[in-house]
Image 1 (cartoon, one colour):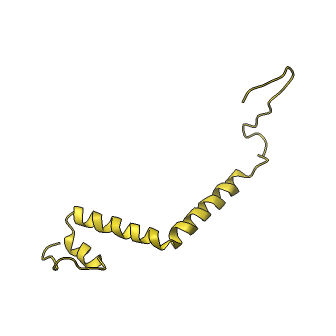
Image 2 (cartoon, rainbow, N blue to C red):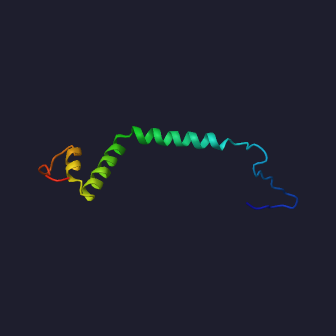
Image 3 (cartoon, one colour):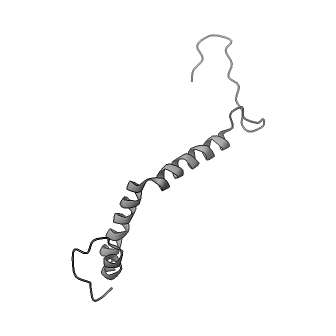
Length: 80
């Protein structure tokens, strides 16, 4: 922000007056909209399932990963 002409002023508010724009409500509306689309998106659920399966396999929880997997590409593991 810059001043272009002599005599211009900038008015600032460091919390001593209420803001003209209700930023708290705006942030809450945006947060709700994002969560609403994220939680209702079936594709997001598939991505999360893959993420959890990958974590289980990497952390050597093959038995739990096998039980969670919708397809069984290998035989049931003995350990877990």
